[in-house]
Length: 128
Image 1: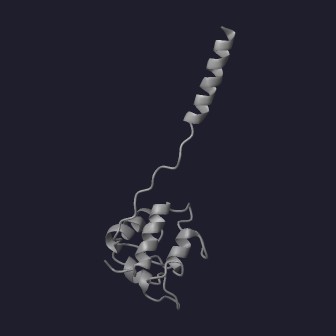
Image 2: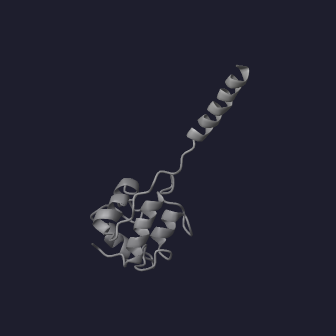
Image 3: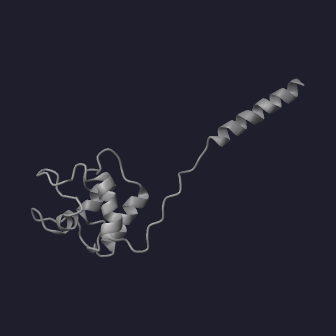
C-alpha cells in the first residue's frame, strides 16, 4: 500500500510540473497586404499615440491625421521611414530597439506587430 501511495505521489508531481508548462500563445498572422490606415495605424493608436500626439518634443506625430506625413517628411535632415528599407528606417529601429532607443519605452511590441510594420515599410510604405 505504501508503494502505491508513493507511486501516485511521484506521478502526480510529474503531472503537476508538466501541466504548468505552456508555449507562447500563437501569434496572429500578418496580413498578405498591410495597409497604413487599417493595420499600421491601429498599432500606433494602441501603443504610440499616448506620447506621439504632436507635442514639440515627441516627434513623429502618430495621430491618424498626421502619421503618414510625419513619418515620410524630412525633419532635421532625416525621415522616420525609408520606403522599402525597414532595417534602415528610424521608426523600425526604434520599435525593435536596434540602433535607436526602444519604443514604446515600457516594453517591446509583439513580434506580429513588428512584422506588420516591417512588411508595410518593405512593401513601399504606401499611404493606403
